[in-house]
Image 1 (cartoon, rainbow, N blue to C red):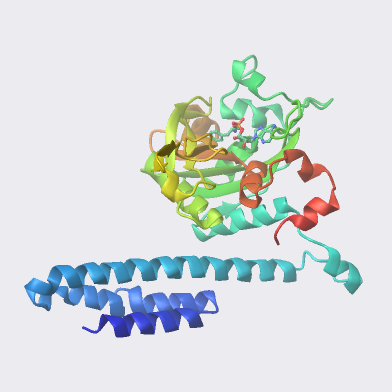
Image 2: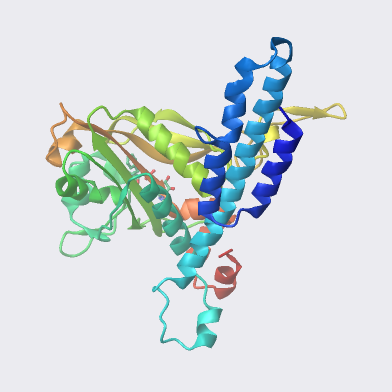
Length: 354
Ligand code: FA5
């Protein structure tokens, strides 16, 4: 088995990858079920037992490094392809003179929304769009927050004269999605939300969220953990771990806060380290040296909420989550001031990588 030769061949092939389709062909050729590296690993049983351990270790290393290189190259390529597609999209008004077209950039919320939609759509989620004005039933009662329930105080609300509200969360669209799609579906609903809150560097009165729901038979929290981990890994192009902490939201039972492993931390610093006799603490300033960042609320949909959506809670279960899309954009593009998003500041907009 000539490992040096195959290593060289793999390296040369990796250099040639230009499109997402090239990456898939490469994966099939080397790492797929009957790929060359896979066959070498399978062939280990036929080699001299005295050499098996060392060859096995070298092969595993080759497989792992090839997978990692491919994963990061494929993400880079996909990113480029996606951005090219966005820039060519019909969203651009072709009647605008050429000179203006070149000056424009996409708003970070537009970019992050498209990215999140693309990731969830690739995992089979329907993309829903709910209205920014909701009835009191949609925003509160349908998600198990009756009148006078203390949970209403957590979301300071803008009321309209006709008794409707500017939705305080995208959960206001949960009831509609259940009635529209019935007892088995998965969907996300991104959109603008409003809360009558004091504004500071991380709180706006107008911000974006994404609601996610998956309902069916035998759905559990493991499904939620899997999808969130996959989605965050794809958005941040880095392996992200997630963990759950018990929390309270009246529309889920049990309810959790989901933390993501800190995207800003150098992975090698996930434990305290020592150099020149000085111990430095783990993590970074952004995760307050915990290596975790609080990401979203989630849980198993409360039986009352399923019933109000016309779904038999004894037969079907589901999870729901809701995360701050504006806050995600802040993390993704390294923006530390939320007020910039609605400021109309062109310098800020031009600075966001397209
Ligand atoms: C909710 O709004 C729940 N509807 C989320 C949910 C859905 C829980 C489904 C369980 C199941 P919360 O109030 O924590 O939860 O808001 C969710 C996210 O919205 C926050 O984590 C934060 O990222 C974002 N957010 C909330 N208020 C603001 C604000 N004033 N400015 C910017 N982002 C905000």
